[in-house]
Amino acid sequence: MKKLLTGFLSFSALSLALAGCGSSEQPQQGAAGGAAKGEPTKLVISTWGFSEDFFRKEVYEPFEKEHNVKIVMEIGNNAERLNKVRQGSSDVDLIYLSDYYAQQGIDSGAFEKIDRTRIPNLNEIYDIAKAPLGEDYGPAYTIGQFGIAYNPNVVKTEIKDWKDLWNPELAGKLTLPSITSTTGPMILDSASKVAGSKEFNEDQAFAKMKEANKGVVKYYDKTSEYVNMFSQEEISVGPIMEMYFKDIQAAVPEAKFVAPASGGYAVMNTVNIVKGSKNKELAEDFINYQLSKDVQEKAAKAKVDSPVNTSVKLTDEEAKGVTYGEETINKLQKLDMKFVNENSKAWIDRWNREITQ
Image (cartoon, rainbow, N blue to C red; front, side, top):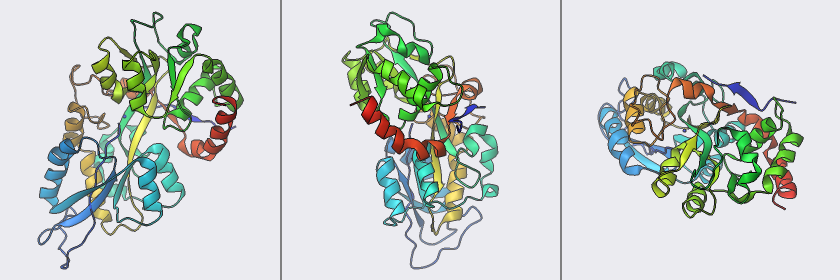
């Protein structure tokens, strides 16, 4: 059976946009790829749209001034934006997607192949982020960690690893992600491992999920559901992405986040160039800029995105709530997204029959 994980390797979700309208005069291109004079080049970036004020001031405006560019965002969730690009109903140049959805875009031929020689900052980022879906396609600009949060005032057993979620004492306190969520395949993979399989074993994974099902209050689809249930003490423990832990802690200050001893899962947001973009080189310039130490450090300190640039240095306080540091990154497990996409429909069907029937 094909291995689900690539093993241990050496997050959030950002969004941006650059809108692609040309002027009636063709602007002369500078060495960096932007317009040297004349009307600004408009490029479109398809993104989620969170932290817009931060990105406008700290990321977009400096790039606009340096490259004579007008940056515009096209906003939506992963599925909506990817479908729009695949249908050819947008003028997007760059698209930000989780690796799960980016693999779907690659499989459907929606992206251009990038010229890595034009993106030197790729040499400055963690290996896991350089080519998460193959050398022809875009990097991960941020890596989050999927780990476990719990309320020690309610959960008296210390949580250290994935296997602890199967403790019967957690019955009536536990939430897990739905199989249709971004992290659903990760909890399914963890179930396979807890069952004792080194390689992914679907039957063992589903058998283990049935055991956990007895104690699950609800399978959540959105992080906001998790945060609301946790703050109201409807649940007191469950897996979540580290970047959202600050929202939990704002409601429950004593809450703890655990990086599982056997390794959390890498949640990677990628950036790719849309097929047919008329501004491919300028888009590559923006990707290079996105990976720079300056941009990565500002985003990390604002707790908007976890950094992938290895030159970024954070204090202990700055690193709180951020997936940071070589030791942490090297322990993360990465799903094979091509394998996940090939099997997701069968897993969803089986989940609906056996787990949430």
